[in-house]
Length: 133
Image (cartoon, rainbow, N blue to C red; front, side, top):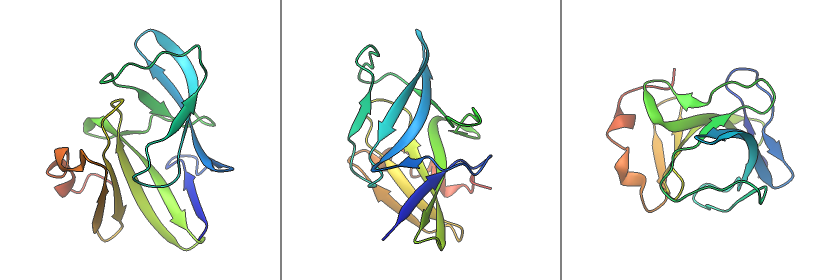
């Protein structure tokens, strides 16, 4: 199974080798790169050792190619990207922007949701509203 992640604006691929690449910003950090696992529900990540990420702080995610803010419109605490499986099926992947909050959602165009992570119940009511158009 081949999985790719891409920017919802420029359609640029965010998948590189076995990571998903994001540009990030946060209070006190004007920019950096964060590499996440492409496996939904696996919360491993890598970033430059000079960057300090503190448990519970919010991180802003951007497309590293076009700079598009990946924040879910209307829900400041969540980000979203598109995911394509085997060059066919396409889904939205929505995830928390808060370090340590393990919640990820895979949402089909038809609205079916699959939840991942121990904190996935935190935002399920927000996602019952169709915010992904």
